[in-house]
Amino acid sequence: MFSGLSDNMNPDLVAFVIGFDHFIVFYFIVINLGLLALFGSSVRSLWQFVQGSFNADYAQIRNSDLTLPISLLVPAYNEEATITYTVHSLLRANYGEFEIVVINDGSRDNTLSVLIDAFKMERRSEPVKLQLKSKPIRAIYRSSLNPNLVVIDKENGGKADALNAGLNLSRYPLFGSIDADSIIEDGALLRLVKPFIEYPEETIAAGGIVRVANGCVINDGHVEQVRLPASRLAVMQVVEYLRAFLAGRAGWSAARSLLIISGAFGLFRKREVIEVGGYSDATDTEDAEIVVRLHRRMCEQGRKYRIVFVPDPVCWTEVPETLRVLTVQRSRWHRGLLQTLWLNRGMLFRRRYGSVGLIGMPWYVMFELLAPVIEVLGFVAIPLAWMLGILDHVHMFLFIFVAFFLGALLSVGALALEEMTFQRYARWQDLLRLMVYGFVENIGFRQYLTLIKVKALVDAIWSRREWGEMQRRGFGVTNSQASKLRES
Image (cartoon, rainbow, N blue to C red):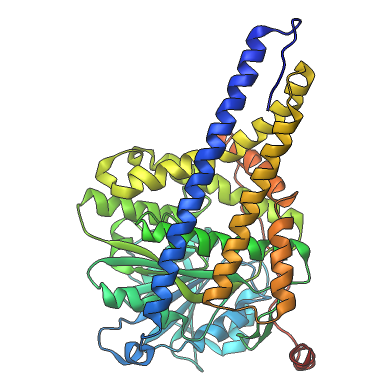
């Protein structure tokens, strides 16, 4: 990207800028080759999954004696707008034996009273096995309408603390972590439990796909029609989520290096989570931290295990529609990534930890954690080169074009995978809009997220932590609204 030299320039500064430019080009080549390889692995994995899933007998899975019962844990903090829709969707789960444990983590709104009124909760005195530490429990309620629904009211301690309290009360050998602003599809649990049946001694965790609920027609905890959000910011997140799950996690799962199972929708074997001490509040992303800790424990014990991504069990969640809420959310995610990697830095480049230590952890350090910093430094290098008079405009614009093209290629490729496999967006208008946003998100949106991540790293270094609150619009629509959308 740099060209001719001037006699008046500081030779050391020029050499530094040119050297950094060569590093940027090398880094760019390596990260994009890695992303393309990951995409190829995802394509192969999804193709194999689709071919095998056609023969899956989920009715047999539901009725099989090998299908273990599940405790569904729903931590809730100020979730009065969405909690009833989430619980309704869970109660309708097409599964054999399960229980729902909602943990009201000291909410300051009407979350508890909404649950009590909606599901006729009655206060009970029940024993709690204190296997994991958590804040004190104030009361336990059980529904008179649905005996498998229980609500824990406890002092505020954060999401990790709430999950530990739920684990203490839970009864079953498998548990699912479900966000209170999420809705799972009918049959999703049967699909997510399948790896535990196929590999009962090895599978310790499985994650499903999280999709954006904004804009969808939702009635009584059920997604009636899949639609795109009106918000441009939310549509860009639809593209981002599809790329992250279909073009990312599917490949990492195939490489046995899956480091993240979304806290919105994951299934775990309770015994192993208890063994590693439950969820920790040492990071801002307890979902990623527990997965990495499970990898570490299994490898150190020399146990054969599986932590997998399953692409067709769907959890629908509400995403931010304002930059302020998005900024807080993504800052927390990137701080949590740094905290998790730092706590488990001993796994880096260690053969003892298999592909996680040799591939997964190094990739996340070099190309997830540090990539925003390198990208911002690249932005700084361009005006510096211009001031030094060594900027080659042709090479610079060619580099920017290739970067934009490859970014769009991955996004559009993820959309193509979606259309060839699960086809959730039936309207051609939605597909066209997604394709357009697959290109548009690379201009402005991706760069904004980069700046957020850099700020998050600075906050983490200075030990600044902020969870932030999601502004919920709620999932409910009136019957007239649903009718109009179905007719359109």
